[in-house]
Amino acid sequence: MKYERIRALREDNDLTQEALGNFLNVSQRTYSRYENDERAIPIEILSKLADFYKTSIDYLVGRTNQKEPYPKN
Picture 1: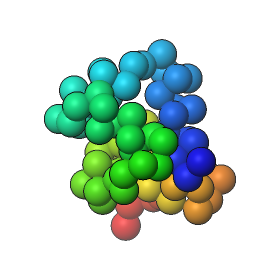
Picture 2 (picture 1 turned 90 degrees about the vertical axis):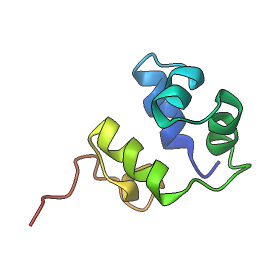
Picture 3 (picture 1 turned 45 degrees about the vertical axis):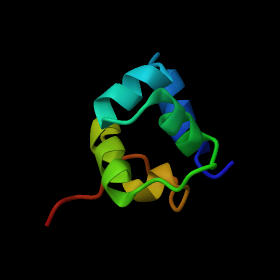
Picture 4 (picture 1 turned 90 degrees about the horizontal axis):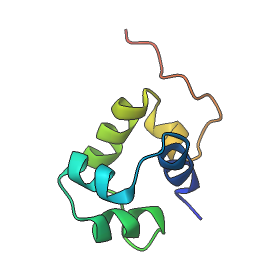
């Protein structure tokens, strides 16, 4: 699964797909499709998720194991 970290972070924070969907202004079904890699996640949504979880987009999509966000220049 491409977006397993997004699911893991949601579950670790005891959040529902519906709650995240509401935060992102998408339906629960759309959010579910993001988690199951049935629909590409728009960059704006990935950015909101990274900010929400205080991490980086690279961490969310598995490009790095560094959970902390990158320092701002």
